[in-house]
Length: 320
Image (tube, rainbow, N blue to C red):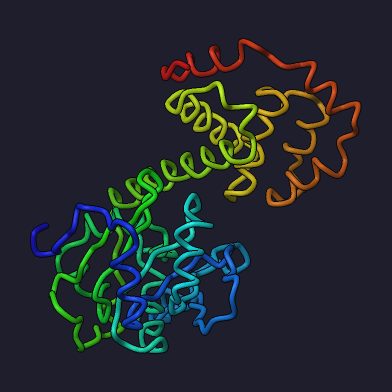
């Protein structure tokens, strides 16, 4: 890993990031869920690829993935990303001396990758937890191809609330010769996919942990960090039984387990909505707020199983 020049020490006090902003070399790959508070130039990446054969086999009617957008970072935007979104998985910083259009054109080549089964996969390289795994597990040539005109990446860390910097393995100002499009169809390995999935879940637990601490503090204030994280992980697994996948839906379901009752979904009315095979998964949490009556909310609260967490986590072997 020495050729990558990985800096294990986190950035402190924003000086380095601010320096890159003043040099007009700092960009951000931002998840489309988040919109910048100030108008800014940006380039939205698209769900397209340079390999027409791979592109044709995608079941587009089932695609829900949205690529990130790339934007230059001002001091105001930097402050917003580091502070307002410090507990969110918003994206990653990119350091580069090239112009926005050229940088966006480079990253556009990586939106689709080839999986171990030969099928196309949308690559969430703007997710810090995913990019961290890939940078650790890619070969030197794969890293060099992905970096291209980027001098480095700064990955927000949800444990330290800081950033870790990965510099270009070529060193110095990233050059110059952009990789050919045909070289940018990277192949993901089975172990990489498994590691990325684990990393995403670990970050998801952290995101919901901070959501509960910030917005549902009274319901979780008595729980130690390790215990709360174990319960959150169990809640995520329970929510996924109902095909809930978005961060907001998983956080909402988890919050109900702490605010209402950990077994609230055992109430017939709640279970009916959550298990509805016709209702789209992304509409289920909203439907609960629309159709559940005050009486049913009270009934679910009275069903509160005080032995639920001990019993549930004991079955998983995690305790707590």
